[in-house]
Image (cartoon, rainbow, N blue to C red; front, top):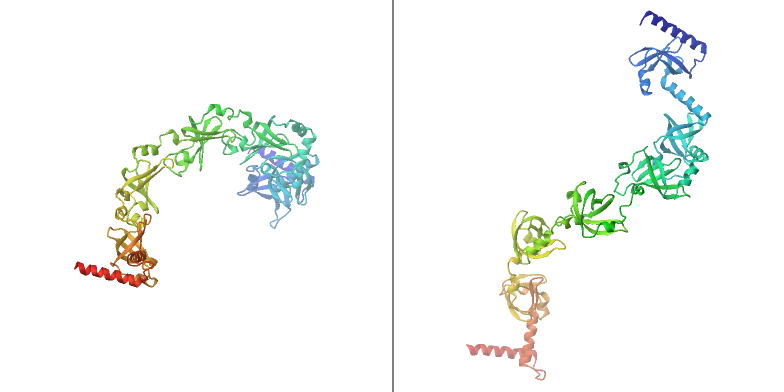
Length: 570
């Protein structure tokens, strides 16, 4: 610094010091002018014309946006205390700016001028409003001219308010948004706007706020709701994909309720409805190309014309894969060829099919593999009810556990297999409609039960061998290998003899066949019925109703005759 500059600086400083002493306004709680005389590591040293200098943290300058202080800067400072324990004056830059803001707001209030603020949160009785860093209170009654249920579009955006009350000692400010709206209405702007809000009219507005379900448009004192379904004829995931806050748009009034003052707007109504004449453009059964626009759990949406979408339900995506998520088959943006399955103009729905544009592998399989065809495949999976065997590139056949073996139970038979095993089977059924192939391993051979009971007739007497004793009866097997069962009640004509412990495994018994049960694969027999039948024959042959012979006599004669026959043969 030159000597001339130094002299000018000293003269200016002396002049300022003299002015400050002359003003007589230097007191605790006042805002005064100060001069930055030097800078230290963390503080700016400020002279306000007293015997001692004050210090202000350099961070205060950065926080209020002033930037780094410089020596020689004239600044407003707030005098917090005239002297601290170190004999220094205590100053605040932030308090000075706050005081200046209060003075400006008081001026706005006195002149009935608007101030800009943001509604930040709901509190008891109203809302808090941030006015240039100072928190003001907005009573609920001062929010709007009419009751508002949804406040999302009013939160955290710059908007005008009127200051209706200020209490500086308590630091309270009360503002009103309603006063702004009433003022606009009194000026005739609102009334003029209401007159133009007829359904079908076009209006210009500013996008005020965007939510998940739509956007609020400021029409000039009145807000209109532009619902997400009215943004475009195309599918819209979120309104922000089309709109931005602050942008000016043209829309159509779709509905206006004069009683509630609610306005509904539409953007897509500015364009022609793509559904007009859709029945003439597309026919059920014809193929159409389109682009996948969205994928959901239940299917995929395909745009087949500008603004016109059809749905491929997940069951119509593929012939062979069941319960597969659409995202495993298609991706957004894919170009696909589909078949029009149905057009519902009333519900504005078009059903499409993807699998119908390719050959049905089930029909091809059924044509090449008639019932009874033997086939070999690899076990792809095992469930509690059967085996799934690959019988084609994309086709699985199922062998139910009861179709594995003639002799073993289903659970025993299925336990002998593991994934990856190769099995031979015979085709029992091909259901093209339901996409199912039923296979059987046991039908590769003839049913042994059928051959074992071929000569057995209901009512005939057969010799059996006891194989097991049960609580409810005895298991037997015929000479032909047919499995049978004699219930406990059928073990004897005499109730006292209806005991399973009378028999032993390996013992021979004669019984009458009561039934051949193909479901249980067993024959039902009865010793009791055989005894009753023999009794009837004896009575018919050796006695009659008028002979007077007893049953014992008749049976005794029959036995003696049988003995004589035996002796004669000897």
